[in-house]
Image 1 (cartoon, one colour):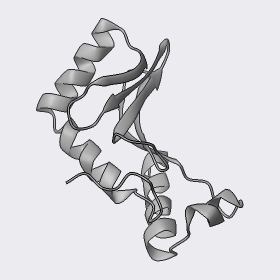
Image 2: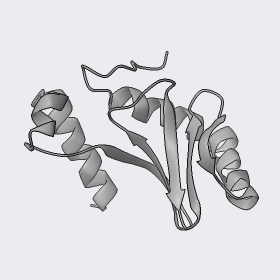
Image 3: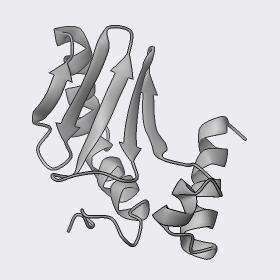
Image 4: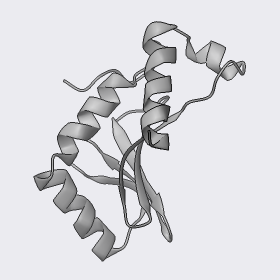
Length: 119
């Protein structure tokens, strides 16, 4: 099993089965905050648990740290190279990336998250 799969499995267990709140998690019972959705080259696409509006995801890697909205891939913050953005847009638009981001976002929302699921 790959590390990302194990992380997703643990996250599902602690949020959905054990019903730990973010407060309990913050107290050190467990820390699972990032959910890797995709890796391309040396870049990671991640959804994070406790977030602010609008629903968004993060892309990090060498010389890249940016966040984008999930519903329309609008750059919210940071910078990304043209080549990397082209790869990201292709994945988002044609390889099921948008659907995967929505699914991950909805699956990982804590009960007390200020930003609910994407409908």
